[in-house]
Length: 297
Length: 293
Image 1: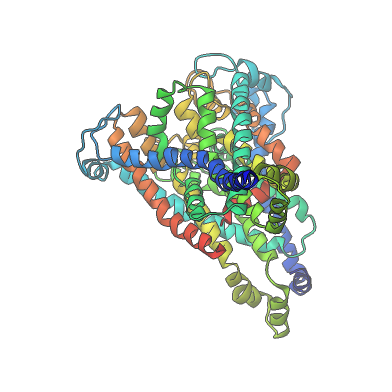
Image 2 (image 1 turned 45 degrees about the horizontal axis):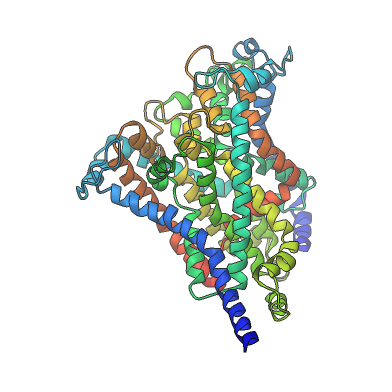
């Protein structure tokens, strides 16, 4: 009798224990992620300035937000930056992966070189590119010293062009990572399919265009999701490379949120901009994660 | 793939192959150039940078910029160099990585070997938390840190990084343990082994590779973080990235480019070292973080 009940206790403990182990993390995530999201959403409907305040004022912050010039600049910049960044990274990544997959001698040396920027902080990348692109001491000066007197490259100081320098530095940092994703995809393709196609007389170009690239669909999707979420979150690189300038020519939503919340004491508007950033990322990530989790079942 | 590519290679021909090699080398140059420039200019006296060519090797080699960046350069108002901030980062990264990895391993174990109703939803919620823009949590986090009286401290940053690192750590271990034979766990259970016993004796001994992957991922991410450091610890407790940014963007005095470059390399060194020593695991972490589920 006593033995039975102790066994019973033990099994019940065993059933309870896993949930107990998981509980603290789940509680942390609930509070620090979802609770905080709820709090920020709430703040975005209040008249918070320097400190959170709880006087609700409806959609006021959102309608103000969309009338602010700097927000318009930030959103336009993000659109330019994100689309160029995603497209260029994908193209370079795909090109490098396909080229590296041609039984290249020295692949083991080249691959790490393509990928190492990913290990660096965006602040380091920004510092390096800031001086590299600086007309006074960087590439422009070098070209002049090498005798190409008419060479001009002052984008980083140019209000209209500065956003493109951020694209350059960001592509430098992450295109190698995209290459690695495509390379893994290429190496995972079934040999038999390719052999069959070659026997049917498909040329190399046709092989890639008709068979290999369509088979890389999952890699394209992953690259798109990762790159777009990185683009929306990018903050460090902008701060280190241009500081959002000249003026606020390279402001993006992430820098906008920070400056309105912490330096301009417009916390309500800052919160509203953060909510919009979250919604944009959620619109991309939620369907993707949902599909991934369902597939596993 | 290998057989097919060999055939491809043969048919692409000489010109094609030269083109492929040339393109690859050109890109290698593109990736290496900025780092080369940083290194070369960090060992030049300032006069050679402002008056000379950034591509040129130094005429006069000097390690003064490195010494200055490390121990005497002006960061904010104090001429402390980056040294104290380097240690701040170490004190922040080590506990955060250790705590996160342990929690992640246990979570992964529960989510794969002790499944229960609703576990996928819990995991989904954790997974999504990896991808939120952190701007959405900055305001409440600042308040919580204030209430706990750890605002502006390294302890505060450890807490922040643990909370937002759990998602990825759990993801890694869950995916890894999912492939681990559940029969072994069940057999041990029948033999009377308990929850923790099974974890220590059966899963942990074979968790080496994924632990390395997870540690490297967390180390790189937390070391390189700027947003949280700048938001919650901008003074004496600032991490390396924030201090570097202060050094580089300080507007007073002459811009000492060579010191900035030396400082940037110092900030990059730990993660770069990890990459050189364990690059294979770094790449695995990146891939596992991008191909989810």
